[in-house]
Amino acid sequence: MSTNPSDRSFLRMALGHPAFVLGFVLSALFIALALLSFIWTPFDPTKLDIAGKLKGPSFEHWFGTDHFGRDMFSMIMVGARVSIAVAFVAVGIGMILGVPLGLYAAARRGSLVDEIIMRGNDLVFAFPSLLLAIMITAVFGPGAINAIIAIGIFNVPVFARLARGGALSLWTRDFVLAARVAGKNKARISAEHILPNIANLLIVQGTIQFSLAILAEAALAYVGLGAQPPLPSWGRMLADAQTLISLAPHMALFPGFAIIITVLGLNLMGDGLRDLFDPKLRRGR
Amino acid sequence: MTAYFLRRLLSLSLSLIAASLVIFLVMEVVPGDPASFMMGLNADPQAVAALRTQLGLDEPLPLRYLGWVAGLLQGDFGISYTYRVPVSELIAERVVISLPLTLYALAISTLIAFPAGILAAARRNSAADLSVMGATQLGVAIPNFWFAMILVLVFAVNLRWFSAGGFPGWDAGFWVAMKALTLPAIALALPQASILARVMRSSLIDTLDEDFMRTARAKGLSRGQALRRHALRNALIPVLTIIGLQFSFLLAGGIIIENVFYLPGLGRLAFQAITQRDLIVVRSVVILLVFAVIVVTFLVDLAYALADPRLRRRRS
Image 1 (cartoon, each protein chain N blue to C red):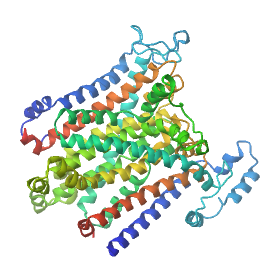
Image 2 (spheres, each protein chain N blue to C red):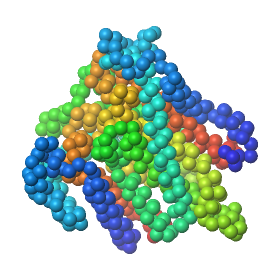
Image 3 (cartoon, rainbow over the protein chains, first blue to last red):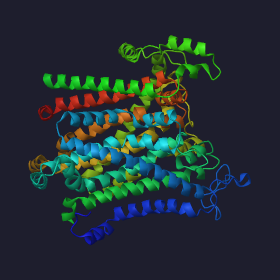
Image 4 (cartoon, rainbow over the protein chains, first blue to last red):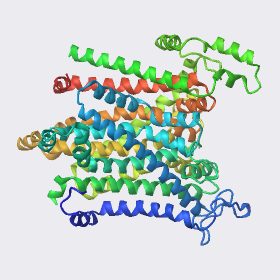
């Protein structure tokens, strides 16, 4: 965004893009709920109340209570924290490892290193990601940290490929040539000239990967391999709801809505950012 | 074409070898000795050692890798640690559920995505386009296992049209078995249909802007005729890539859905094997799925090269 001549016009355009605004509001809502859960939740999300179990939504318990009488709304707030943290760190790992790999491959285009990095990426893509994530967490023990690693690994090739593709087209440009004539080495050019110019691409993809990571985390938690009890998690709340679905459908509905709204928000925001960053579309407006 | 084919075949073999090496080595570093796992906690160390020898776990690493690959080539995946039967038998039992489920889901996904994508592209920016795009946004945001639970709630618990899970087996009759696979297939198909519809739409929109479409209209074809005869065929290439990818994704992605519906498929087999440390079963299923992805990608590439001579030259 720093390359944009006027940040104020970018903001105005962003506000005029309804899908982006909707996506931003939805994602911000859950990030805010997650942050708020650190200082306040309506009830203690781990407090059991067997007498008040499986209550439907009411004025007191907005989203009802689960099979142990825990307040669903409080659990969803804390669950947001877990989902967002796991997804955020997993995508961060993918970026931190993947982007330098991709930049390096692009700087040494056609070399053996480039070939090895790209073929390695193809190989990771060929593996059934969910199955391997389940394997990693099952073997090294279920928990939030291993879920992060399992999801993060599959983000590495995504960012490596994206960074390489974006960088390759920039290496032929005049300003890169000028930097080389000025005596900068390839690593410096990659960091100072290539990276800022592919930042937009990376941000857009990062948003999309973030939403995919939330879905992956929910799936892992659903099969019991995510964050462990008593820490609430959206996926495990759904697993608990499954056997009680005819008795207490609200137990399945609300965590599901939380996942859908968060993922939908991130996707809309990502698509919106892509439109806003794309100069071709911008001129057309 | 022959040269192209041979080059692709060589790269296919290299991928398969690399994949098998990676899977073999990953399984080696996995903590937990299968022999002591099979014998239980209080096992006699001598009995465990004997079992290790019997399972061939004492041989040097390269020898075991070669032995494994030689077995794979003959369809011999080894003996399951926990079930004590050949893994190939276990897999054969499960594939007859997972493969039809995958094809069923793919068929549903295509049947939804094609009309939706074509409609959205043909009437770009109309209300129909907006609804299709909105629906696909929702479709990719819904976790398929949650959707599966809602399907069970509505169609099994409330309406009682389907059973909530399990599989009667193909012996119970083709339609009975297909009925048991219907809800799982719909749950699997939903996100895939959304992705496919979006690809169909954007690919068709790109094609509609091509010069040959203007020529087709100029020679007197109606919009619909030009779309059917010229645009669709050209727009299909990226769509077929995605269908190829989705096939392999669905085959592996059934792991969660098979758990929701208690279907004894490949995914459930892998999941149970992982928790029981039955490494031979795990690596057999993983390598089978990885091979499926690599081979399907290869076949899709080859199909393009046959259909479009330009691709043969560009890639050589």
